[in-house]
Length: 110
Length: 120
Image (cartoon, rainbow over all chains, first blue to last red):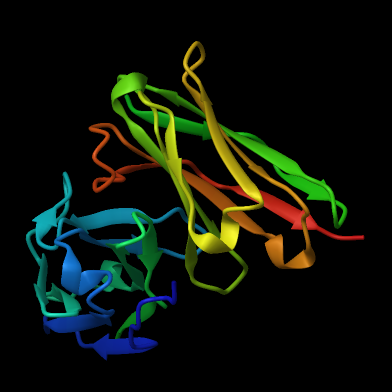
């Protein structure tokens, strides 16, 4: 199972909105509504932000939202803040009953 | 308070095995699912496998199917991950994560990670 494809980096200014795309196939993203997004700060464990495509995890700001269209999932961060600077990973259930992570995207707040 | 406490760092020689533990507390262990994820330095997250605690059912991607075993001890609320035939490519931080509802979709609780170094 190959990793899902994400852009290596995305940047934005404080207050802006940015979107991270995660592309897979009909064997993973396109076939199931089981996409999660994780935030990871340097040296820290990942933190669940979104599960089941669009559900925010407990305590996660409403500035974070998720969606899916076909084989591509997306995470949008609105009102970008300095604390949002981190690596973000998508993760999808697959038709092998396993999970696969994306390649990861580094978000930089300018 | 939900907690996952992982065992300490390991240094192993190529060809040997390592077993990392993940002790849980603060939720009903038998209703949960636990996954293992690893991350080599500067690299992406990589999914290793998971266990549905109540049934003991496990699943692994093809890459790890022959070398990894995930198990659990119901009496102590601990999940274990063993990796065999280690090589330098297995050097990474290994994380456990729990979904207290057991669906396998909501891995909200994470351990701090265990560094496994494979070196001759």
